[in-house]
Image 1 (cartoon, rainbow, N blue to C red):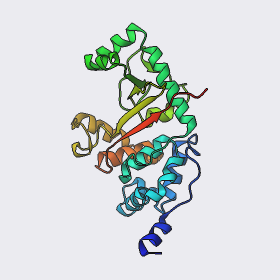
Image 2 (tube, one colour):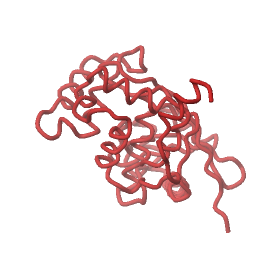
Image 3 (cartoon, one colour):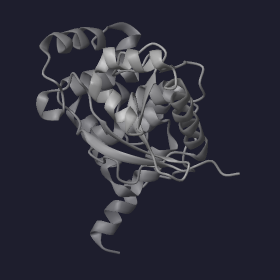
Length: 250
């Protein structure tokens, strides 16, 4: 065995099936994912360089791709962003795949309401309507992290998988594949990150996010707030990924 193989063997961690921990709370999954790397939870949350490096090195290694895919999509996608792993090897469970297909189909029904189309036009402009007319489906989750979802075109919070999708995929476009399924292509980034990391350069929004994610007390260590602070400081690497959602099997 070469030194390189030995090094990879040391860092490789046991992983179970895809989506095994997807229904556990993001806080529990976040803590578990960081502990697996040998990093300090507090050090990671506070931006300690050594702890960040441990996490980045662990999850950028292809050998640990299966570890990422065990978690909820929120944890999975964020650690791909932070480590630079990106969308390579990204998988979601059959259950999440079915839930995502259902969400897209529900939205396709919503778009039959003329008022939904009008609200989308008023919120995002004619360009979105043009894409809809070409057969694409814009999916907006109520409470999504990255969009003001138009009335009559918003998926309800009680939709299965909603919480995980709204904090990971956010709003996205789905394109029918002609076989009853869909192709979802999206970019994972943060609006309030530096421009060099995909941010929009809006100082007012960045200042507001900085104040929000810098809350003290126990909320200081909530994964959402930790991720927000890391993105604001310029950590992480935006990436584009594609999910193929096959048609339902009979």
